Amino acid sequence: MKALLCLGFIFLATTVHGRTMTKCEFARLAKEHGLSGYDGVSLENWVCAAYSESSFNTQATHYNPGDRSTDYGPWQINSHYWCNDGKTPNAYNGCHVQCSELLGDDITKSVKCIKQIVREQGMEAWVGWRKVCQGRNLSDYLRDCHL
Image (cartoon, rainbow, N blue to C red):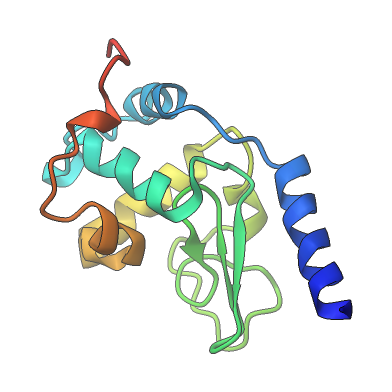
């Protein structure tokens, strides 16, 4: 019973404090930040990746008990490899950014980091993208957005 209450509180806290954008709001923001066609990746793929990772929640976090890392922001950038949260053991911080800076509606630092990630590892770095987006027709992710 205690575990259920605790999980419910975490979900409620994420829902109350996070801002979940619509697909068109997020697509517009991603386009403004130069993601359309970046490194050969279509805007639809970037939007699908964010949807599959966080449902466009700019405050999303997810704890990974296996390596005690946390994923941050709309693209769920991992603290073991890409950002510093001050609590992940043996963290690398490849993007040279504080993980807290990847949360919120200003996605500038997240975009800078995901550009580095895709240059080094490709879109395959995102498990959500591989499962939900890879090899699929993604036209619905921009449909009716008037971009």
